[in-house]
Length: 397
Ligand code: NAD
Ligand code: USQ
Image (cartoon, rainbow, N blue to C red; front, side, top):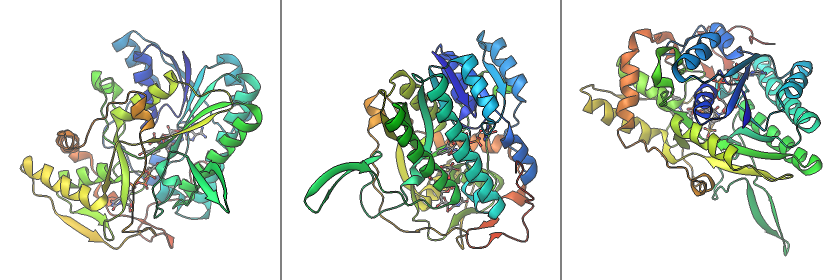
Protein backbone atom coordinates (compact mmCIF):
# COMPACT_ATOMS: atom_id res chain seq x y z
CA UNK A 1 0.00 0.00 0.00
CA UNK A 2 1.20 3.52 -0.71
CA UNK A 3 1.44 5.28 2.67
CA UNK A 4 2.35 8.88 3.44
CA UNK A 5 3.85 9.21 6.93
CA UNK A 6 3.37 12.85 7.93
CA UNK A 7 5.89 13.70 10.66
CA UNK A 8 7.95 10.66 9.64
CA UNK A 9 11.18 12.15 10.98
CA UNK A 10 9.85 12.29 14.57
CA UNK A 11 10.03 9.98 17.57
CA UNK A 12 7.00 7.87 16.59
CA UNK A 13 7.10 8.59 12.85
CA UNK A 14 10.61 7.36 12.08
CA UNK A 15 10.33 3.85 13.57
CA UNK A 16 6.81 3.58 12.10
CA UNK A 17 8.16 4.40 8.63
CA UNK A 18 10.81 1.69 8.96
CA UNK A 19 8.30 -0.85 10.29
CA UNK A 20 5.81 -0.17 7.48
CA UNK A 21 8.58 -0.29 4.88
CA UNK A 22 9.77 -3.66 6.19
CA UNK A 23 6.15 -4.90 6.13
CA UNK A 24 6.10 -4.20 2.37
CA UNK A 25 4.33 -0.83 2.22
CA UNK A 26 5.55 1.91 -0.11
CA UNK A 27 6.41 4.64 2.39
CA UNK A 28 6.91 8.36 1.80
CA UNK A 29 7.99 10.49 4.77
CA UNK A 30 6.67 14.05 4.81
CA UNK A 31 8.19 16.47 7.32
CA UNK A 32 9.25 20.10 7.69
CA UNK A 33 11.85 19.04 10.32
CA UNK A 34 10.58 21.70 12.73
CA UNK A 35 11.20 19.29 15.61
CA UNK A 36 14.93 19.44 14.89
CA UNK A 37 14.70 23.26 14.84
CA UNK A 38 12.87 23.24 18.18
CA UNK A 39 15.84 21.32 19.62
CA UNK A 40 17.94 24.39 18.81
CA UNK A 41 15.34 26.70 20.32
CA UNK A 42 15.33 24.67 23.55
CA UNK A 43 19.11 24.22 23.41
CA UNK A 44 18.47 20.52 23.87
CA UNK A 45 19.33 17.34 22.01
CA UNK A 46 18.05 13.80 21.76
CA UNK A 47 19.86 11.52 24.22
CA UNK A 48 20.63 9.21 21.33
CA UNK A 49 22.57 10.76 18.44
CA UNK A 50 20.30 10.87 15.36
CA UNK A 51 21.39 11.03 11.74
CA UNK A 52 20.06 13.68 9.39
CA UNK A 53 16.98 12.72 7.36
CA UNK A 54 18.78 12.03 4.06
CA UNK A 55 21.34 9.84 5.78
CA UNK A 56 18.58 7.94 7.57
CA UNK A 57 16.79 6.93 4.38
CA UNK A 58 20.10 6.18 2.64
CA UNK A 59 21.08 3.88 5.51
CA UNK A 60 17.70 2.13 5.35
CA UNK A 61 18.16 1.49 1.61
CA UNK A 62 21.61 0.01 2.26
CA UNK A 63 20.44 -2.13 5.17
CA UNK A 64 17.09 -3.34 3.85
CA UNK A 65 17.17 -2.83 0.09
CA UNK A 66 13.90 -0.86 0.48
CA UNK A 67 13.43 2.76 -0.54
CA UNK A 68 11.62 5.30 1.59
CA UNK A 69 10.61 8.57 -0.10
CA UNK A 70 11.38 11.86 1.61
CA UNK A 71 9.35 15.03 1.03
CA UNK A 72 10.36 18.26 2.74
CA UNK A 73 7.37 20.53 3.34
CA UNK A 74 4.99 22.13 5.80
CA UNK A 75 1.40 20.97 6.27
CA UNK A 76 0.46 24.63 6.69
CA UNK A 77 1.44 25.20 3.05
CA UNK A 78 -1.66 24.28 1.02
CA UNK A 79 0.20 24.40 -2.32
CA UNK A 80 2.68 21.85 -0.99
CA UNK A 81 -0.02 19.63 0.56
CA UNK A 82 -2.28 19.60 -2.49
CA UNK A 83 0.61 18.86 -4.84
CA UNK A 84 1.75 16.06 -2.52
CA UNK A 85 -1.63 14.31 -2.65
CA UNK A 86 -2.01 14.80 -6.41
CA UNK A 87 1.43 13.29 -7.08
CA UNK A 88 1.33 10.39 -4.64
CA UNK A 89 -2.34 9.34 -4.58
CA UNK A 90 -1.84 7.67 -1.17
CA UNK A 91 -4.06 4.80 -0.04
CA UNK A 92 -3.31 5.60 3.62
CA UNK A 93 -1.98 8.66 5.43
CA UNK A 94 -0.50 8.37 8.92
CA UNK A 95 -0.59 11.81 10.49
CA UNK A 96 1.97 12.36 13.28
CA UNK A 97 3.01 15.87 12.16
CA UNK A 98 2.02 18.07 15.07
CA UNK A 99 3.64 20.00 17.92
CA UNK A 100 3.21 17.40 20.64
CA UNK A 101 4.68 18.70 23.90
CA UNK A 102 2.14 19.96 26.44
CA UNK A 103 4.78 22.05 28.30
CA UNK A 104 5.86 23.72 25.01
CA UNK A 105 2.28 24.85 24.42
CA UNK A 106 2.10 26.28 27.97
CA UNK A 107 5.20 28.54 27.76
CA UNK A 108 3.39 31.69 26.67
CA UNK A 109 0.80 33.04 24.24
CA UNK A 110 3.06 32.68 21.21
CA UNK A 111 3.85 29.03 21.88
CA UNK A 112 0.17 28.30 22.51
CA UNK A 113 -0.82 30.03 19.28
CA UNK A 114 1.94 28.28 17.33
CA UNK A 115 0.79 24.89 18.65
CA UNK A 116 -2.89 25.44 17.93
CA UNK A 117 -2.24 26.96 14.50
CA UNK A 118 0.25 24.31 13.43
CA UNK A 119 -1.83 21.38 14.61
CA UNK A 120 -5.38 22.43 13.77
CA UNK A 121 -4.70 24.07 10.40
CA UNK A 122 -2.23 21.38 9.31
CA UNK A 123 -4.83 18.70 10.03
CA UNK A 124 -7.51 20.71 8.24
CA UNK A 125 -5.31 20.94 5.14
CA UNK A 126 -4.85 17.15 5.23
CA UNK A 127 -8.63 16.63 5.42
CA UNK A 128 -9.25 18.94 2.45
CA UNK A 129 -6.46 17.30 0.44
CA UNK A 130 -7.87 13.82 1.03
CA UNK A 131 -11.35 14.93 0.05
CA UNK A 132 -10.25 16.73 -3.10
CA UNK A 133 -7.47 14.48 -4.39
CA UNK A 134 -7.62 11.03 -2.76
CA UNK A 135 -11.13 10.50 -1.30
CA UNK A 136 -10.67 6.74 -0.81
CA UNK A 137 -7.54 7.31 1.29
CA UNK A 138 -7.70 6.15 4.93
CA UNK A 139 -6.54 8.80 7.43
CA UNK A 140 -4.81 7.32 10.48
CA UNK A 141 -4.49 10.27 12.84
CA UNK A 142 -2.57 10.39 16.10
CA UNK A 143 -4.72 11.76 18.88
CA UNK A 144 -4.03 11.44 22.58
CA UNK A 145 -5.55 9.76 25.64
CA UNK A 146 -5.27 13.21 27.22
CA UNK A 147 -8.22 14.36 25.10
CA UNK A 148 -10.60 12.77 27.60
CA UNK A 149 -9.01 14.31 30.65
CA UNK A 150 -9.50 12.45 33.92
CA UNK A 151 -13.26 12.09 34.55
CA UNK A 152 -14.64 10.22 37.55
CA UNK A 153 -16.26 7.63 35.24
CA UNK A 154 -14.88 4.93 32.91
CA UNK A 155 -13.39 6.23 29.66
CA UNK A 156 -14.70 4.55 26.48
CA UNK A 157 -13.08 4.31 23.04
CA UNK A 158 -14.26 7.57 21.50
CA UNK A 159 -18.01 7.28 21.95
CA UNK A 160 -20.42 6.84 24.86
CA UNK A 161 -24.05 5.75 24.98
CA UNK A 162 -25.99 8.36 26.93
CA UNK A 163 -29.56 8.23 28.22
CA UNK A 164 -31.00 11.67 28.88
CA UNK A 165 -34.61 12.54 29.74
CA UNK A 166 -35.74 9.12 28.58
CA UNK A 167 -33.96 9.19 25.19
CA UNK A 168 -30.73 7.44 24.19
CA UNK A 169 -27.94 8.24 21.74
CA UNK A 170 -24.30 7.28 21.12
CA UNK A 171 -22.25 10.46 21.08
CA UNK A 172 -18.58 11.49 21.07
CA UNK A 173 -17.17 10.95 24.57
CA UNK A 174 -16.97 14.28 26.52
CA UNK A 175 -13.50 15.86 26.46
CA UNK A 176 -11.73 17.88 29.14
CA UNK A 177 -8.03 18.07 28.19
CA UNK A 178 -5.26 19.58 30.32
CA UNK A 179 -3.08 21.78 28.06
CA UNK A 180 -3.30 24.01 24.97
CA UNK A 181 -1.58 21.13 23.14
CA UNK A 182 -4.05 18.48 24.30
CA UNK A 183 -6.88 20.81 23.25
CA UNK A 184 -5.58 20.81 19.64
CA UNK A 185 -6.20 17.07 19.51
CA UNK A 186 -9.81 17.59 20.57
CA UNK A 187 -10.26 20.23 17.87
CA UNK A 188 -8.71 17.83 15.33
CA UNK A 189 -11.03 15.02 16.40
CA UNK A 190 -14.07 17.23 15.91
CA UNK A 191 -12.84 18.33 12.49
CA UNK A 192 -12.16 14.75 11.40
CA UNK A 193 -15.55 13.58 12.66
CA UNK A 194 -17.23 16.39 10.72
CA UNK A 195 -15.27 15.57 7.53
CA UNK A 196 -16.30 11.91 7.79
CA UNK A 197 -19.93 12.91 8.23
CA UNK A 198 -20.17 15.47 5.42
CA UNK A 199 -17.71 14.07 2.87
CA UNK A 200 -17.74 10.39 3.71
CA UNK A 201 -14.00 10.26 4.46
CA UNK A 202 -12.62 7.21 6.29
CA UNK A 203 -10.54 7.85 9.41
CA UNK A 204 -9.09 6.21 12.49
CA UNK A 205 -8.30 8.47 15.43
CA UNK A 206 -5.68 6.77 17.60
CA UNK A 207 -5.87 8.17 21.11
CA UNK A 208 -2.39 7.24 22.12
CA UNK A 209 -1.08 7.11 25.68
CA UNK A 210 2.46 8.01 26.70
CA UNK A 211 5.09 6.24 24.60
CA UNK A 212 8.34 4.95 26.14
CA UNK A 213 11.49 3.38 24.77
CA UNK A 214 13.42 4.17 21.62
CA UNK A 215 14.45 0.91 20.01
CA UNK A 216 12.55 -1.20 17.49
CA UNK A 217 13.91 -4.20 15.57
CA UNK A 218 14.49 -1.92 12.56
CA UNK A 219 16.19 1.00 14.34
CA UNK A 220 18.66 -1.47 15.88
CA UNK A 221 19.97 -2.57 12.50
CA UNK A 222 22.39 0.34 12.03
CA UNK A 223 23.51 3.28 14.21
CA UNK A 224 22.33 5.69 11.47
CA UNK A 225 18.78 4.36 11.96
CA UNK A 226 18.68 5.27 15.67
CA UNK A 227 15.49 6.86 16.93
CA UNK A 228 15.37 10.03 19.01
CA UNK A 229 15.04 9.81 22.82
CA UNK A 230 13.84 13.00 24.48
CA UNK A 231 14.53 13.35 28.17
CA UNK A 232 14.51 17.11 28.77
CA UNK A 233 11.69 18.83 30.62
CA UNK A 234 9.64 19.97 27.62
CA UNK A 235 9.56 17.02 25.17
CA UNK A 236 10.84 14.27 27.48
CA UNK A 237 8.00 12.03 28.64
CA UNK A 238 7.88 10.79 32.18
CA UNK A 239 9.28 7.25 31.99
CA UNK A 240 12.06 8.19 29.58
CA UNK A 241 12.95 11.04 31.94
CA UNK A 242 12.96 8.83 35.04
CA UNK A 243 15.31 6.35 33.34
CA UNK A 244 17.74 9.09 32.36
CA UNK A 245 17.56 10.58 35.86
CA UNK A 246 18.34 7.17 37.37
CA UNK A 247 21.24 6.76 34.93
CA UNK A 248 22.90 10.03 35.99
CA UNK A 249 22.14 9.65 39.71
CA UNK A 250 19.61 12.51 39.80
CA UNK A 251 16.55 11.99 42.04
CA UNK A 252 13.48 11.02 40.03
CA UNK A 253 11.31 14.13 39.59
CA UNK A 254 7.79 13.12 40.65
CA UNK A 255 5.52 16.15 40.27
CA UNK A 256 3.15 16.67 43.20
CA UNK A 257 1.53 13.65 44.85
CA UNK A 258 2.41 11.30 41.99
CA UNK A 259 -1.10 9.81 41.77
CA UNK A 260 -1.46 11.11 38.17
CA UNK A 261 -2.42 7.94 36.26
CA UNK A 262 -1.88 7.54 32.54
CA UNK A 263 -1.97 4.89 29.80
CA UNK A 264 1.48 3.82 28.51
CA UNK A 265 2.88 1.81 25.62
CA UNK A 266 6.21 0.68 24.23
CA UNK A 267 7.36 2.32 20.99
CA UNK A 268 7.34 -1.19 19.46
CA UNK A 269 3.61 -1.35 20.12
CA UNK A 270 3.08 2.12 18.60
CA UNK A 271 4.47 0.97 15.25
CA UNK A 272 2.44 -2.25 15.34
CA UNK A 273 -0.80 -0.38 16.20
CA UNK A 274 -0.33 1.85 13.17
CA UNK A 275 0.20 -1.17 10.95
CA UNK A 276 -2.96 -2.82 12.34
CA UNK A 277 -4.98 0.34 11.70
CA UNK A 278 -3.71 0.58 8.11
CA UNK A 279 -4.31 -3.09 7.36
CA UNK A 280 -7.89 -2.86 8.68
CA UNK A 281 -9.20 0.43 7.27
CA UNK A 282 -12.28 2.29 8.45
CA UNK A 283 -15.35 2.31 6.21
CA UNK A 284 -16.26 5.36 4.11
CA UNK A 285 -18.01 7.87 6.38
CA UNK A 286 -16.67 6.22 9.54
CA UNK A 287 -14.43 7.82 12.16
CA UNK A 288 -13.23 5.01 14.41
CA UNK A 289 -11.51 5.78 17.68
CA UNK A 290 -9.03 3.36 19.24
CA UNK A 291 -7.46 3.98 22.63
CA UNK A 292 -3.83 3.14 21.94
CA UNK A 293 -2.10 2.08 25.15
CA UNK A 294 -1.35 -1.25 26.79
CA UNK A 295 -0.99 -0.63 30.55
CA UNK A 296 -1.79 2.08 33.05
CA UNK A 297 0.43 3.32 35.86
CA UNK A 298 0.53 6.25 38.22
CA UNK A 299 3.62 8.45 38.07
CA UNK A 300 4.48 7.36 41.63
CA UNK A 301 4.26 3.66 40.66
CA UNK A 302 6.54 4.25 37.68
CA UNK A 303 9.11 5.97 39.86
CA UNK A 304 9.09 2.98 42.25
CA UNK A 305 9.52 0.59 39.31
CA UNK A 306 12.50 2.56 38.02
CA UNK A 307 14.07 2.59 41.50
CA UNK A 308 13.70 -1.23 41.65
CA UNK A 309 15.05 -1.77 38.14
CA UNK A 310 18.02 0.53 38.83
CA UNK A 311 18.71 -1.45 42.02
CA UNK A 312 18.91 -4.67 39.96
CA UNK A 313 21.57 -2.97 37.84
CA UNK A 314 23.50 -2.01 40.97
CA UNK A 315 22.45 1.66 40.95
CA UNK A 316 20.83 3.45 43.82
CA UNK A 317 18.01 5.69 42.61
CA UNK A 318 15.97 8.02 44.81
CA UNK A 319 12.69 9.85 44.39
CA UNK A 320 12.12 13.57 44.96
CA UNK A 321 8.58 14.94 45.07
CA UNK A 322 8.62 18.40 43.47
CA UNK A 323 5.96 21.07 43.66
CA UNK A 324 3.88 20.30 40.60
CA UNK A 325 4.64 22.79 37.80
CA UNK A 326 1.43 21.67 36.08
CA UNK A 327 -2.20 22.25 36.97
CA UNK A 328 -3.61 18.73 37.00
CA UNK A 329 -5.40 16.22 39.25
CA UNK A 330 -2.77 14.49 41.38
CA UNK A 331 -5.11 11.73 42.60
CA UNK A 332 -8.02 10.53 40.52
CA UNK A 333 -10.08 7.63 39.21
CA UNK A 334 -8.78 6.17 35.93
CA UNK A 335 -10.20 3.25 33.99
CA UNK A 336 -9.95 3.55 30.20
CA UNK A 337 -11.15 0.94 27.70
CA UNK A 338 -8.46 -0.27 25.27
CA UNK A 339 -9.64 -3.48 23.62
CA UNK A 340 -10.09 -2.54 19.97
CA UNK A 341 -6.42 -2.84 18.97
CA UNK A 342 -6.10 -6.06 20.96
CA UNK A 343 -9.10 -7.38 18.99
CA UNK A 344 -7.22 -6.58 15.77
CA UNK A 345 -4.26 -8.68 16.96
CA UNK A 346 -1.97 -6.42 19.02
CA UNK A 347 0.35 -8.48 21.25
CA UNK A 348 1.62 -5.96 23.81
CA UNK A 349 5.09 -5.62 25.23
CA UNK A 350 4.72 -5.26 29.00
CA UNK A 351 6.91 -2.98 31.08
CA UNK A 352 7.53 -5.62 33.74
CA UNK A 353 9.08 -8.07 31.24
CA UNK A 354 12.57 -6.67 31.82
CA UNK A 355 11.85 -3.80 29.43
CA UNK A 356 12.71 -1.36 32.14
CA UNK A 357 16.20 -2.86 32.36
CA UNK A 358 16.73 -2.42 28.62
CA UNK A 359 15.42 1.16 28.75
CA UNK A 360 17.71 1.94 31.66
CA UNK A 361 20.64 0.38 29.86
CA UNK A 362 20.12 2.75 26.92
CA UNK A 363 19.98 5.70 29.29
CA UNK A 364 23.19 4.48 30.94
CA UNK A 365 24.91 3.94 27.58
CA UNK A 366 24.37 7.59 26.59
CA UNK A 367 24.52 9.26 30.01
CA UNK A 368 27.54 11.36 29.06
CA UNK A 369 25.27 13.20 26.62
CA UNK A 370 22.81 14.32 29.31
CA UNK A 371 22.62 18.08 29.81
CA UNK A 372 21.79 18.46 33.50
CA UNK A 373 20.37 21.97 32.91
CA UNK A 374 17.39 20.22 31.32
CA UNK A 375 16.50 17.81 34.08
CA UNK A 376 14.34 19.95 36.37
CA UNK A 377 10.96 21.19 35.10
CA UNK A 378 11.06 24.66 33.63
CA UNK A 379 7.57 25.49 32.44
CA UNK A 380 4.90 26.36 34.98
CA UNK A 381 1.25 25.90 33.93
CA UNK A 382 0.23 29.02 35.89
CA UNK A 383 2.91 31.45 34.83
CA UNK A 384 4.49 29.88 31.73
CA UNK A 385 8.16 30.65 31.32
CA UNK A 386 10.34 30.62 34.41
CA UNK A 387 13.34 32.88 34.82
CA UNK A 388 15.90 30.14 34.35
CA UNK A 389 14.49 28.81 31.10
CA UNK A 390 16.62 29.05 27.98
CA UNK A 391 13.54 29.23 25.74
CA UNK A 392 13.25 31.98 23.15
CA UNK A 393 10.67 32.79 20.50
CA UNK A 394 8.79 29.80 19.08
CA UNK A 395 10.81 28.54 16.18
CA UNK A 396 8.25 28.45 13.45
CA UNK A 397 6.04 31.48 14.09
P1 NAD B 1 7.75 14.47 17.33
O1 NAD B 1 7.74 15.91 17.67
O2 NAD B 1 8.95 13.66 17.63
O3 NAD B 1 7.42 14.28 15.77
C1 NAD B 1 6.52 15.10 15.06
C2 NAD B 1 7.10 15.33 13.68
O4 NAD B 1 6.18 16.14 12.92
C3 NAD B 1 8.44 16.06 13.70
O5 NAD B 1 9.39 15.40 12.92
C4 NAD B 1 8.10 17.45 13.15
O6 NAD B 1 9.20 18.03 12.47
C5 NAD B 1 6.91 17.16 12.24
N1 NAD B 1 6.00 18.31 12.05
C6 NAD B 1 5.42 19.06 13.01
N2 NAD B 1 4.66 20.02 12.44
C7 NAD B 1 4.75 19.86 11.10
C8 NAD B 1 4.20 20.54 9.98
N3 NAD B 1 3.41 21.61 10.12
N4 NAD B 1 4.50 20.09 8.74
C9 NAD B 1 5.32 19.02 8.56
N5 NAD B 1 5.88 18.35 9.59
C10 NAD B 1 5.60 18.76 10.85
O7 NAD B 1 6.44 13.83 18.03
P2 NAD B 1 6.14 12.29 18.33
O8 NAD B 1 6.47 12.00 19.73
O9 NAD B 1 6.67 11.45 17.25
O10 NAD B 1 4.56 12.32 18.22
C11 NAD B 1 3.93 12.05 16.98
C12 NAD B 1 2.43 12.19 17.13
O11 NAD B 1 1.95 11.26 18.10
C13 NAD B 1 1.99 13.58 17.61
O12 NAD B 1 0.85 13.97 16.90
C14 NAD B 1 1.68 13.38 19.06
O13 NAD B 1 0.70 14.27 19.49
C15 NAD B 1 1.21 11.94 19.10
N6 NAD B 1 1.46 11.30 20.42
C16 NAD B 1 2.74 11.17 20.88
C17 NAD B 1 2.95 10.58 22.12
C18 NAD B 1 4.33 10.41 22.70
O14 NAD B 1 4.43 9.93 23.87
N7 NAD B 1 5.39 10.74 21.99
C19 NAD B 1 1.85 10.12 22.86
C20 NAD B 1 0.57 10.28 22.35
C21 NAD B 1 0.37 10.87 21.12
N1 USQ C 1 5.58 14.04 35.23
C1 USQ C 1 6.27 13.91 36.42
N2 USQ C 1 7.62 14.11 36.39
C2 USQ C 1 8.30 14.40 35.25
C3 USQ C 1 7.59 14.53 34.03
C4 USQ C 1 6.21 14.35 34.06
O1 USQ C 1 5.69 13.63 37.48
O2 USQ C 1 9.52 14.58 35.31
C5 USQ C 1 4.12 13.82 35.21
C6 USQ C 1 3.30 14.97 34.65
O3 USQ C 1 3.01 15.92 35.63
C7 USQ C 1 2.08 14.23 34.13
C8 USQ C 1 2.61 12.87 33.72
O4 USQ C 1 3.88 12.73 34.34
O5 USQ C 1 1.16 14.04 35.16
C9 USQ C 1 2.78 12.69 32.23
O6 USQ C 1 3.61 13.71 31.71
P1 USQ C 1 4.42 13.50 30.35
O7 USQ C 1 5.26 14.72 30.12
O8 USQ C 1 5.09 12.19 30.37
O9 USQ C 1 3.25 13.36 29.28
P2 USQ C 1 2.21 14.42 28.70
O10 USQ C 1 2.56 15.81 29.00
O11 USQ C 1 0.86 13.94 29.10
O12 USQ C 1 2.38 14.24 27.12
C10 USQ C 1 2.85 13.04 26.50
C11 USQ C 1 3.23 13.38 25.07
C12 USQ C 1 1.99 13.86 24.32
C13 USQ C 1 0.88 12.83 24.44
C14 USQ C 1 0.59 12.47 25.88
C15 USQ C 1 -0.34 11.27 26.01
O13 USQ C 1 4.24 14.38 25.06
O14 USQ C 1 2.32 14.08 22.96
O15 USQ C 1 -0.29 13.33 23.84
O16 USQ C 1 1.83 12.06 26.52
S1 USQ C 1 -1.41 11.43 27.40
O17 USQ C 1 -0.58 11.63 28.60
O18 USQ C 1 -2.16 10.21 27.48
O19 USQ C 1 -2.21 12.60 27.19
